[in-house]
Length: 461
Image 1 (cartoon, helix red, strand yellow):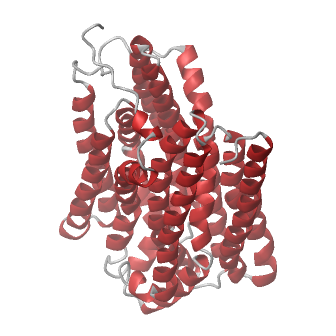
Image 2 (cartoon, rainbow, N blue to C red; image 1 turned 90 degrees about the vertical axis):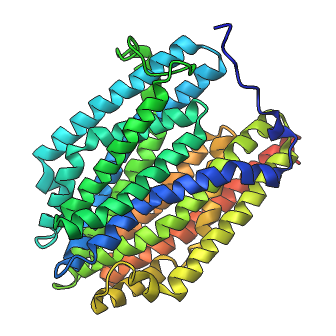
Image 3 (cartoon, rainbow, N blue to C red; image 1 turned 120 degrees about the vertical axis):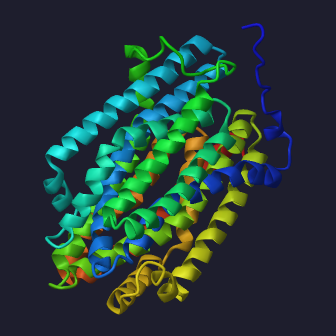
């Protein structure tokens, strides 16, 4: 242990110019987030151009998104919980515990991946119908998910080990892993779909194969014995206390991801049940395309919030409210700029965007209208996401979870249930921007309350 070099505490977080810090910390996170968000877009873009069945295939793919989000929720419970515990132990210089946490993270990902895949295979058709698949789109959704589930353990290990890399002091390698996977997926998907004639199954196989290749590279990085924490014998046996802490910390991202999954399910069901016969597949495809495009801008904002988090947390602990406020306001400004650009793209030029995914005139018309409606209040989403992460950064976890669930559960789900009764399928579409506006208003109120609390405590900037 005496030969181990321990990294210095990043005191520049309290001294360096806030704008410079935010760029330094946010850019790698943004690159990784954008790369990750391209998964669905790549699959959607190529699948949408499969001859003769493009619209039905892309609709089938759209109904698998909540399925994969649910799998990701379980993965986040293990990955985020394990990575957080790993960081804590490294900070405490408790390297033996850190090694065991890494081993338990690997074992838990294998177990969760196997159990999720097994249960899903048994009830696959029922789950897909519940998620919104229709008679026409079910075969495509099933073909895609069968391949994805066969590689589910690979997916869980890929994301879990990437989180471990980031937490053990290798954020650039974690970013490279994400970019490598997306690039390989972009190359392999058209080859498997069009050259090998594998259709939608080819897109799924490309995703799993890209993750498997990257997983080999990740494993080699974490197997280096020169690293403080690395993969080795004797660390994989589950320990009750470690597992309990991983699952407890991971419960918050699990709930948030599960809520997002449920929202997509309800939206798909609402579109299916309220669309006239012949437009069900078009509505599902329009939502899949619009959601994928909007998601890119959301992921950029999430990258900004990841860059903001260490700056805010450090200076909040150092009792530097001036720097906390500056970091918050600067991130809000940049995030709002990003989502405003998204608003201009989605509302001003939706037709050009939709043509990336499909050339069917009816789908272009439907998806363009849907994109304009969904993104009606898109500029306020950036502000809401930043504030949600801000509360988490200063230890107000309950407020963070409340704001996260406000848009997805407390507001959107009731609107998705009520509005379609009076306005049909248009009620499903309009529930989303209405939810965005209400959630933004609540976010402003909670932020004002927080600043007033600080003022009463005498720590106002």
